[in-house]
Length: 273
Image 1 (cartoon, rainbow, N blue to C red):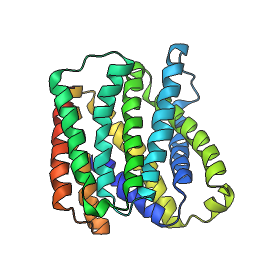
Image 2 (tube, rainbow, N blue to C red):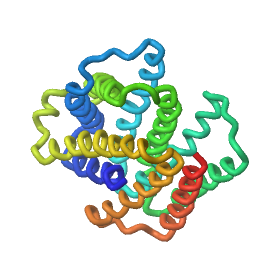
Image 3 (cartoon, rainbow, N blue to C red):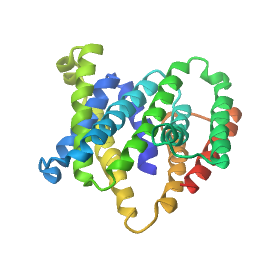
């Protein structure tokens, strides 16, 4: 969870070094793909997984990371973006109800409503006056992650190396194309990236996208999903602490109040998983 939480301040540091947000997302996915090639060995998944794998790769490998970087790029403060990512759980439950026709209990509806009320309280923080575009992209990031959770349910039996390799490959290619048309001058932009920014991008790929996820998959061998999921509520806490240490951001009373409501609601939703 420390690694997951560190993804946001680390990405912001790279963006502050003038790395284009979409290109940075593409390079991150490119590193993930390259590192996993020896483990993947270019195995092709069974036909029954292709549709869900493509949907998961686009939602997770493209949309989540591009909206994450755009939200940080358009925000002067990071903590609300980290907290906004917690909406992925309510969005995931809502998406499963719509796509998979799953029933949502009254308790879950109340917790989902509570999470959105917490975010609404944070919106009234005066510090966010010039950061609404960033929060909008953060909401799209959370929605994309929620959709990815739904598609991942049909990929549980797929090898982890195949799953992550396809996410990295598809994310890298699509994001590189988008970067070319939106940001332009890809070669020039890559040449302008300094060594410290390359280290930050590599950190996101190795420590966050691979390390943190592989550690979670390792825990699934010994613990149930219901035992592990609640710990996801810790990553915004670690992220906010790291944001304070790196950027000196001090949470306001409205942010603390809204944050407690959001994290508590999401924690209880995790407990019900």
